[in-house]
Image (cartoon, rainbow, N blue to C red; front, side, top):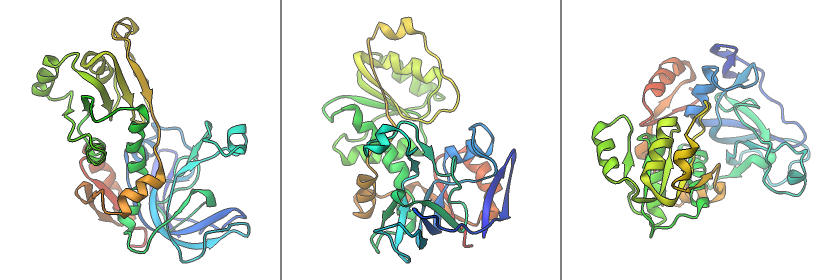
Length: 310
């Protein structure tokens, strides 16, 4: 099969063996796979991943084959994937609870930038026939955005988002659906917005970051009321720093959140309540990856998708 393969510092479109479903696995013929910041970091070597590796974790497609022990999934079924991999060793896994030693499709297991992918059956989410592969492949970022609701924020509180990018736009759309209205979004690169934010110092009940840095954390601390909530959401691979003496004066509550419900995310997309079409770039062949990666590295306004079958 054709696949986008990372090996060391090299990323190429190469021929790879089509996966065979192990006992508890499902092989999916990939229809579409979305590109995100994590894929680019992995390709650039900024994230430690296995080598060689097929990238990609936001995907949807059609079940090609299933392992002998798999139940509830059948060939020909349209599906998407929850890319979180359980360790299957810890007590939480054995008790059916959320694992704290997770792996990830496209980082620890070959991903979706290929014609076929093999994943554990428990990661597979069935799709209704009227849900497009493009919308289904958006399930992972929607579930990531829903995680901010785990912090306990309410529409009655005043909040703000830090970072102008595709993820902050998606978060605005989702929070609006939950009654929060359109939250202000601030970009630290905008002198005008920073002047506005300085005038609102100590005004917000909560602030959400979509791209963490030391400067962002400092601005978040300044923006919240005493006892306010700082919600950390992005998957920053580099260390960030803050002065504890400045933070403790506000006595903030920090919420570091991972994912919300994938079922809820898929319901929002499949019901039509959430329309992400305005956040989509275009669909590309794997062979276009160099231009697509380069453009996505400089601008995160729209999400590109790969169709491995092109």
